[in-house]
Every structure is written in structure tokens, then in C-alpha cells.
Image (cartoon, rainbow, N blue to C red; front, side):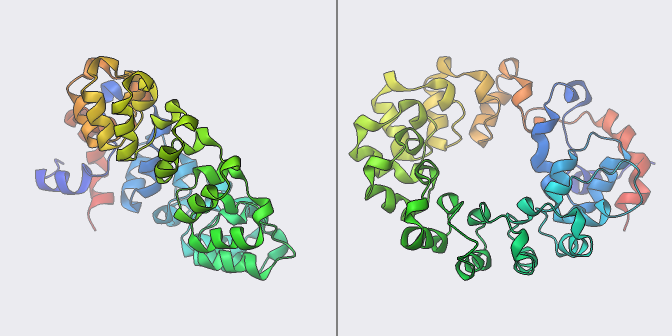
Length: 327
């Protein structure tokens, strides 16, 4: 049975991994994890039945995949319990609540859903108190405040929520991880760094777009390699003004529009192995025009470069049309 063209275009192409068969083995399938994190349930069923290689770890975090993961309809399902403990679906949390032996508490501690925080509050002694500081849910932050005998400030330096950083600054200053804080993009973190310049990890701060003014004030401390990764327009202008200090291998990874424009004006300096993993649409256009330079191991979504081989994929998909596309 042939697929109507309009149904093919509206239902299939936006979701199916679109690299043509000839390139399928060249693409690093492990780098397609974003697809499995967000794919809809119907398309996941389709891919499982097509026996496409599935990234079960990332699929285990997908809230839309919970019914499939918990069903008995597929022999090949391999739930990754660590990643499943990160799944924000209320169904996932309820299943784990009913099967507590399956919970990976160090991962559950990082789960930012309200249901997960309730579960954590009911199992205080099982919370990973060394890492809960990374959890951005305000209810998790309140859980930290309510349990000072357990929580000692671990993980807060990486947290980008205002309340977490205020808690860090006012109550756990001696627990600050200055390397992690130097990477934190929150303005409160930058303010703490500004007041303690001797503790800044300047190489890390050099890639932090929120730290650009602090970097300009201390240009002698800049790591120009790391600045080449900085997405701030001001950072890119600093690189333009100091071309001899640009690290083009790292700039080729920089996905800011300004970085791509700088690379276009230094086309012969592009490091294609790195640039092949750059997901900026402007970078994709350059890759489309220079397919012979692509390093396929770095491509996250080959559909951005090549169109699907309709004949081969339709042969594999159409047999599942009735079951998986008709509601």
C-alpha cells in the first residue's frame, strides 16, 4: 500500500531519522540521542518495529515513551534504569514509586519534575545530598533549605537558578566549587566571581558568555583557546581584533552566528572534523555546499545534509502504515 504524499510529508518526514541508507552506517548513531529524547510515541513504535538501532538510554528519559517502555509488547525493550530515574513523566515516577528497588537514587535526585521532588521528600535518607544542589526545581531548593542536617551545599555551584545561588552565597560560601562557578552563566554567579577574582578559573571563565565583561577587564587572564568557544558577540569581536590568537579548531565548534561569520571570512582555516558537528543553520548551509569535507562521525542529524532515500525507507515503513499511522 503506497503512502499518500501529503501523509508521508506531514506524518513521517518530520520524525524519521532521515539519513539515506548509503550513509546510515557512516553516521554516528550514538549522536542522534536528541531524537530519542523527544520522539513521539507513535514514531517510537514505528522505529522499534523497523528494528532501527535504538539509543535505549536516551529513550528511557523520554516522557512520551513511558507507555512503550513499560509495556510487554516488545521483546527488545531495554530500559536503562539510571536514565529512567531521570524521566519526568508522572507515569514513570508512579511506576518507580511502586517498584522502589528499581530506583537509581543518585539519578532520581537530579530529576526536576515536581513528582520526583515529592518522592525525594518522602525518602530523605536515600537522597543523594552531594548532588541535589544541581537540581533547579524550586521545590528541590526548598528541600535543601529544610534539611540542613543532610544538605551541605554540594552541587550548588553548578545550579543556574537564582535561589540556589543565593543559598550558596549566603549559607555555603565555603563550599563553593570555583571551577564550576566559573562556568555558571547566572549573573549572581558572575557577581560572586567579580568579588573574588583570585579564585576564578580564568580558562573556564573564558568560554562563559556571561563572563565577557569580567574578561574584558582582565584581558591578560584570558585563555584565547577557550575564548574561541565563547558564544558572546563581544568575544567574537575580540577574536576578530586578535586573529593571531584564534584557535580555529575550537572556533569551528562555536555555534554562535557571529562565530560562523568569522569562519566564513577565514574559510581556509575551518577545521572540518569539528565543524561537522556544528548545528548552527548557517554552518549546515556551509556543510551542504561542501559535502566532500564532511566528517560523518560528527554529524548529529544527516537529514540536515542529505535528503532521505525515499525508495529504501518507504519499503521499510509502508508495511507498518496501517498499524502505526492510522488513528
